[in-house]
Amino acid sequence: MDYGIQMYSVRDITGKDLLGALRKIASIGYKYVEFAGFFGHDAGEVKKCLDDLGLAVSGTHTGLGEIEKDIDGTIEFHKRLGNRNIIIPGHDLRDQSKIDAFVEKVNFIAPALEREGISLGFHNHSGEFLPNSDGSMIHEQLVYRTALKLEIDVYWYYNATGYSANGILSRLGDRVNFIHIKDGFRHGEGKPLGYGEAPIKDAYAYARNNNMLMIVESESLKPDGITEAKLCYDWLRAQE
Image (cartoon, rainbow, N blue to C red; front, side, top):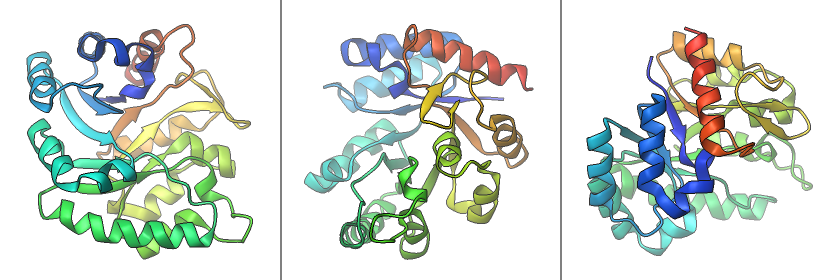
């Protein structure tokens, strides 16, 4: 199987040497990358590097504010990159008014991206599955009030609920293009795959059975991002 990685996992080097980080990721064996910033690099330069390394872009984490600031420029950049999935990595949705404003904005932006062959998605943390102080539930409203693709982070879902994400993955069906497969402990401490308590074997089995791309995100940088990326890749291979 082929696996991807969110480049935030190696953020200790991407800001200084994004292309070098891509070379190291490719040498481990990853085939897909999900970007978290381009650090001044032109889309064509990054695309050439990806092609030379045999890597493909699965998506990018791009904030709503950045998209709103220049929709046309965002579309042009991502088309040159060969990216079809722009994922909002998180947003301040702490009350109903903020949810309402967010829904209005993404429901305006998503069709503009879709016309250019780009889908708009959203990546969850824990808070989206917990009630806000006013009782509003974020993720539930994103499901029913938008057509966003939903990149489920299986660890953050577990951290919020104590459950495997397989149930919500099944319920959401084709609203999910791929998952973040991540490990850690319930109190919010992330770990490389196989070093925490999250039900990641369940997530792995679900993704494999449903032909769903798995994107590694390992965040602790202990001792460094590339070491964690290798540990995660080795765990994935051991499940095959």
